[in-house]
Image 1 (cartoon, rainbow, N blue to C red):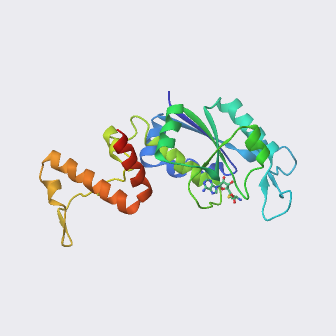
Image 2 (spheres, rainbow, N blue to C red):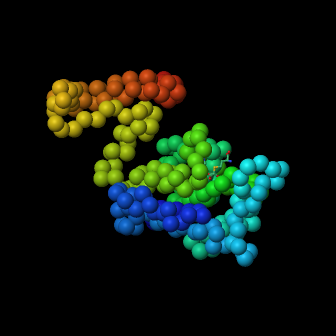
Image 3 (cartoon, rainbow, N blue to C red):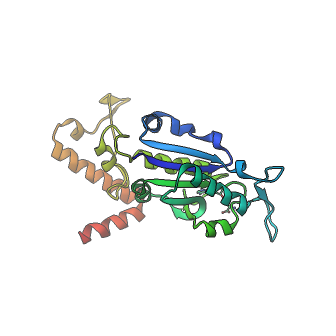
Length: 236
Ligand code: SAH
């Protein structure tokens, strides 16, 4: 069964966008995953098709109405089927990481609700039990770019998407470390050589070098990951 993503957005024309290109785009054409978008505005029932209103209590900006977003969620389920998880992209959410992406893939299907303006009325988040997922500690102008990042991270984990399954296993975060540095031809460029060990043909040595580099780079760039890595290593 193909992995399914249903996106709810005020800007459906943004999709598939970058997801229609390169590896993700090929996988989409090959039917390895399915993307359905629903225009939140299409379910707005009043004459002006309004989807937002001013916040109670005052303050800047507009808030997406709960009745409209609720109707959009129900419409998406009716049209495209039930989903394993319903997510609202939000800076308040749990931070997206590689483990979370693997879980989304394993669960088989996901609905992604993209906010705009000041966000979404809390009542629909509660009533529909939306999980909140964040891309990081910064504020985007809408959930669409975050949804695309989440989808992209998931799609490249689907079997058959990356040319070589081992690529995924060796990447940053999969073993709790950042990736070692990569090199390709030419062997000498602008006075800079490729590390000799990589040309040695000695696979044991190459493996050890890559492990040492991955540890070194993680320790200096991401002490937070390094600490977790050391704890899990001493435990096993
Ligand atoms: N007023 C909100 C920000 C609204 S930004 C606040 O201060 O928390 C508008 C929409 O962009 C949000 O509803 C959300 O869907 C999306 N968005 C913004 N930053 C995001 C992030 N870091 N991760 C995921 N989605 C984000």
